[in-house]
Amino acid sequence: MSKQDLLSSLSPLPIVNLAAINTPSSGLIVGTPEFCRRAFEKDDSCRQHYQRLAEQRAFGADEIPCPHGFASRKVSTPRGDFALTGFIPYPRLGGKNESARAKSNKKNKIASTEVGRASSSLQNVAKELDSVEQKTFDGVSAGLHEIRKLNREVKQTAERMCLRENRDDPTLANPETVKIWKASEMMSTHFNIIELVANETLMRLPVRSRVQPYRLFDKCARIYRPAGNTGRISLHANYNFQSEIAACDKTISIIPTVLIQNAIKYSPGDSEIVVEFSLKEQPFDVQDKLLVEVTNECSSVLQLDDSIFGRSVRIATDTDGSGFGLYVAQQVAIQHKTKIQFSTFHNATPNYCRFGIEFDVLT
Image (cartoon, rainbow, N blue to C red; front, side, top):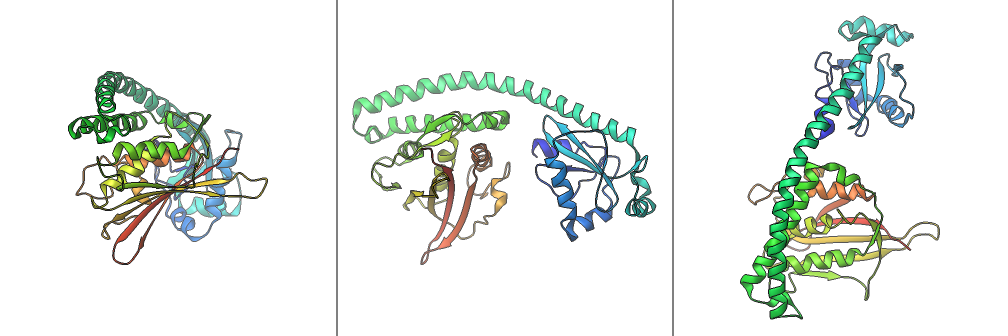
C-alpha cells in the first residue's frame, strides 16, 4: 500500500487522490454514493472536475460543486493533494442537481463545519504518519549505515585482490574472489533499494548532475556479467557514445541495476542480454532523446502488465525477489521526468521481453 493509499483509507469522507484520479474511495464514516460510482464510469465530467481541483492553486475552505450536484473540497497534505467529495454540504451550494442528489443520498448530507474538521483531521493524520515513518527510517538508516561500512570493506578488499591478479580485466581473476566482489556489489544495490523504499523523499531530490547512461549500464554489465562470459550481457551503441543526461547521482544508478538484474533473473543462463543505446534527434528547439532498451529472452508464461511496477509486486513466484526493484526503478524514472516502458515479442521460437526508457539529452 502506498503512502497516498494509506492516508486515503483513513479519511472519514469519500476521497480522491488527485495525483491518481479514480472513482472516489469510501470514507470510514460516509460511503461513496452509488451515483458517483456510475457517473465516474459513464462520462469524463467527473474526472475533469477532479482534474480542475488538482490544478487549482489556492486551497480555499469553500466547497466546489461537482457536475452532478455533490460537492468536493481540496485538501493539501504532506503526502499530496486530495479531494474530500461525494457529500451534500450545509449550507447548500444551490442548483437543481444538488436538490436531486440530496433527496436520494440523505446519509451524505454534511455540514460545512464537519467537512472542515475532516479536512484538518486528514492533514493531522498525514503529519503523524510522516513523523512515525521518519522515526522508523532514522532507525533503519542508522543500522544500514553500519552494515554499509562493513560491506564497503569487503567490496574494496575483494576488488583490490581481483585487480592485483588481473588488472586488464579483474572479472577474470580467481572465481571465488570475483564472486565475493560481485556479491558485495549486489548488496550495495539492495541497500540502496531498501533506503529508497524506507525514505521516498530521496526520490524527490533535485536532478542536477550530468551523467552518461552508457557508463552506468557498462559498469552494471561488468559487475553482473558471469566470469569468462563477456557475451552474456552486451552493450550496443555508436562508437565513442557519450550522450549525457541530467540526473540525481544518489538514485540514477538504480535504473540500470534493476533492469539488468531482472534481465538476468528471468532469462535462461546461456542466452544473451542486449542493452541498446540510440539517439533520437528532435527539431531544433526540442531536446534530443536518448533511448535505452534492455532486451532478454523470457518465459512465455510470464504475465506482464503495468502491475509489475507496483509496490511489492513480483513478476514470478518461482524466483527470489522482494518485489520492490521495478517499483523503485519506476519511481526514480519519474524523478527524472520519464518512465520505464515494457513490451514482449516473439522472434521465431523464443519469447522476448524488452524494457525501455527515454531521457532528454543535454547539449
